[in-house]
Amino acid sequence: MTAPVTVTHAAVGYEGRAVLRDVSLTVAAGEVVAVLGANGSGKSTLIRAVLGLVPLSSGSVALFGRPARRFRQWHRIGYVPQRLGASGGVPATVREVVAAGRLARRGVLRPPARADRTAVATALAAVGLADRTGDPVSTLSGGQQQRVLIARALAGEPDLLILDEPTAGVDAASQEAFAGALKEFVVGGGTVLLVAHELGPLRSLISRAVVVHAGGIAHDGPVPEPAGHHADPDHDHVHPHGPNEPAGLWSA
Ligand SMILES: Nc1ncnc2c1ncn2[C@@H]1O[C@H](COP(=O)(O)OP(=O)(O)OP(=O)(O)O)[C@@H](O)[C@H]1O
Image 1 (cartoon, rainbow, N blue to C red):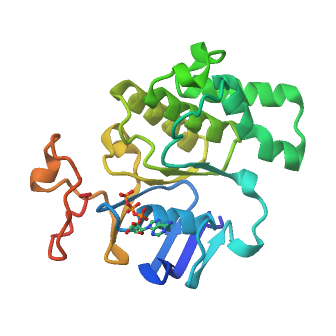
Image 2 (cartoon, rainbow, N blue to C red; image 1 turned 45 degrees about the vertical axis):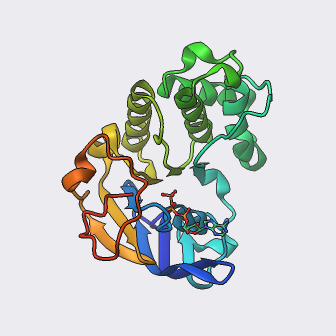
């Protein structure tokens, strides 16, 4: 089967400053790939480059076998950005936000309204928020809001989910709910590319870990064991990392 994501010798920078120098990465169908690395190493930049949200200065990206530039099947990809941010007083209900995840499908396939309603209900049940559908999103906790975003991505019935730190700062119940939803998605044949600092309950679902370091991929294989003080739950993940640090680079 065609790989959902193929990145070949990609370089990406901002304002002339290189962040990724030479990154190659393939995510095969059915894999759950975690992108790990220190703060500022370029994890988000890598997934933004995959989605075409930042331009490559060299190299290429292919999505489902098509050069990203010519890729049109965006309904096949669900993306959850790092944060919803302040809800800005928008009085949208949980159901409305999740229903927005159907828009790309509607444009392409025009499924009947009943299919939309079923997909929204299924996605909300998957993240454990079936009882909150009519509530304004602003009344939910940060972790629950993050779950709403994941449900929005799932409602589009994508083949590939791309998630940027889906569980950062999220309460334990939401992390468990998220892990359950992700497992269901993968069992159903989905592929996942996610950025994470802490894998927590996701750990057992990850089939491969990729560590971004110094503009390249420093590790591509099994999930590295947390090393030394990084394993300490109180480790705050904000200190800078030196270039000589061992590739327990699990760090951040
Ligand atoms: N839009 C932007 N313009 C300029 N510089 C940027 C931009 N976005 C990111 N950067 C810089 O690029 C580098 C990589 O950032 P990126 O967000 O990809 O790292 P990250 O590994 O995802 O970090 P974190 O773990 O903190 O989320 C950082 O030095 C960051 O300051």
